[in-house]
Image (cartoon, rainbow, N blue to C red; front, side, top):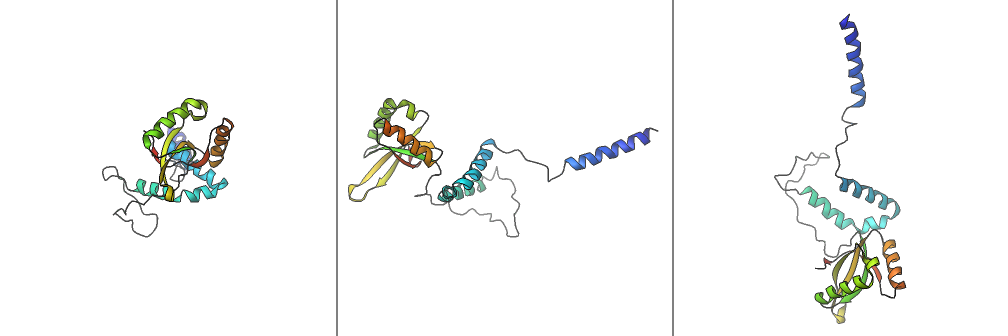
Length: 188
């Protein structure tokens, strides 16, 4: 009697387990920042594919950096196709001149980094609401016979449209502003 009750119940549990588990239903935990970045890339690819094309060098560098983990942390990598995985990492990509995927606003230009620092503090005092939460960067630019200037930029901003909107607010306050990409060294 116990066997007649147990056997159908066990079969039912086994069948329901087979229907709800398996490799095709297993979802590995994903790092929240990685998931958010993946969603942003997909959305941007749909609406602004040119921004994805402009960031291709940075994405390639990130891909290589993620594939080139230290030996102690590296997990075995299964080949995705029939080609063998190259065990030796290649050279680091040259990112000089690569465009950032993030936008910024160019607020001023200086010849001396110390002057740029005091200029940034002055701008923060004059426009605290506009610069709240933004980081300053200095990006050198060669202007031919005029020489090298340091562009003071504030960002990051999510899109060129956000940079244009912030510039409109700066211009309405009587300040100069130009949309830009978010590159350069962090202002110290």
